[in-house]
Length: 358
Image (cartoon, rainbow, N blue to C red; front, side, top):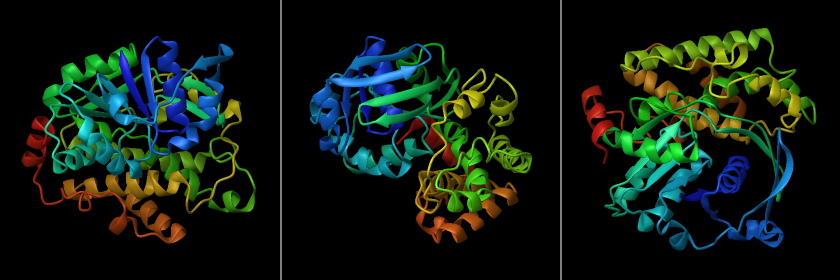
């Protein structure tokens, strides 16, 4: 299958390597093409996982139009704040039948489709999103990536939902046996694990994060008090899902820590900690855990809860503390039902849009 991989972060490196090794025709593109200079010079990257280390041949491209021509799937494991710009760049090149996959999305499916429609794109395509990055992974250099584990379950919602069957069939070719279709793209957005995992970890570890040069929020930083807040926050997420009519499985975060039945499967948390890759320096105010998982993800979750009339005091409290710590107004400048232009919709109108698309 012809797959476009967008971006140059941890997930994009893992995606490009995995798809190439699986025999797909990979077209790897990022907005700053010069950042691929070392990859181009090396003729690919080195991937390290449970099988060991090995080279993977990859030739990045700076020609997005050529990359998109004939592609069936576009995988964009990029930050949420990049989605609007990427949508603007993709709009002239979209074709009927193509599928964009956002792992995860933070309701980027709607934002990107709206941007592309506003830009005049009339192609009949779908955008899908899931609840986590399909790899626990970290770049080791500009030509090396280490994958600690891969997702075994990816609950995936599609916009428009009427195209779910055909979109899931395409995505499943890239992620065999992992894709689990769910109701729609908002359901997919409300599976996003980052806004549940990371806000308690960084806010309740703010002292050691700022004191020590390096700190592992997933090891020393994951203590029983924080896990209790995780559970309370996740219960609010599940209550919001249920109020909107979304059914189980809700992929409760407790399963990530306590069972093998979450998105990453067996011993994922132990593998993450054991790799040592998350013992790292964090700039608390500017790190993606703050600006994306809170400023985009948690802010969106709170706004959906308020829109749906579901009490979410833990999420609201964490968002308020994060705004004080970061000195950012995430309600005004982050991703919310208001900032994406949906706060005035009633549930029935929202459901129609999710089913039929834009």
